[in-house]
Image (cartoon, rainbow, N blue to C red; front, top):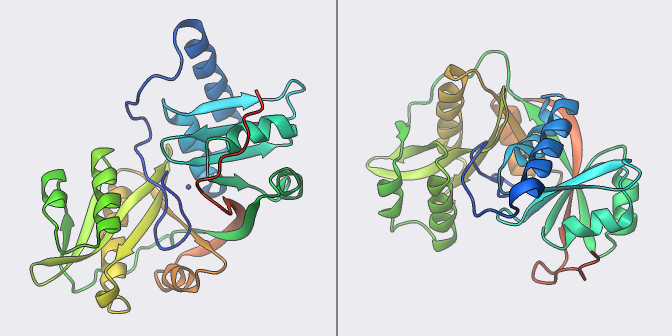
Amino acid sequence: MARLLYNVKLMTKENIKPSKPLLGGRRAQAMAHLKQRYLSLLPDLPLWVETRDLLSFEGSVVAEDAARNGFVIWSEDDDLGSVVGQPDAETIMRAANYAAEILAFAENIAHVRSVLRHYQAEAATIFSAPAQLPPLSPHMCRQLGRAEIASLQHLPSDTLDELSDVAQDGAIIVAAFDGNLPVAFAYVASETETLCDVSIDTLESHRRKGYASAAAISLMQVMMKRGKTAVWGALESNLASQALARHLGFVEVDTLWVLSRTNPLDKTKQMF
């Protein structure tokens, strides 16, 4: 679960956020009703955090095939989509036209891969937070405001851009400090009624020194006070992310698949 994805940082956006309107009038109402119907059918479990977050996002689009064998949901803003059930190939391609990353699940990964042959698929492990959070780290942590994020000129440009986008969406950002310098950042990538997907980004010079753990634990505490349990997703190839999740006490609960365009700039031919 959302700027994806499953490295030590994921996708991000507020559960509901303002966005440019994609539809108007009756079509917008029909879209909202369809999203609400599928939200009511998907349980609020770690496996579905990103998908339910997309369904809750005003700027996302949902489509179902004529036989109602399944649906796709995508956000062009976040370049992310999700396939649920067994929708037909044309419906899946609609999401692929707008999203460079598509989520699939155990019951449909074979079908989705057969349609999206130009996408590379990799399994991702889904973890859930322990019942009791790890003890606080000695590293100082605190939340960062939007204006403060903009002033962090010591960050690589891609990290600064990512955090700026997160801050613009209104998400909570917690930083761990080395002296007066913020060096690791944790924020909510996706959010549902009871769950939140944690994303971590750490300066290369400060990795494996406890700063990422400190930021993650601090964010988890903030979100726990809001009644949210943390979820963590890590690609199979991202051993560092998996190791950090287990170090923090997260427990493996499920698996999904992330399908990524081999060439992110190459959108599929629109089929509708």
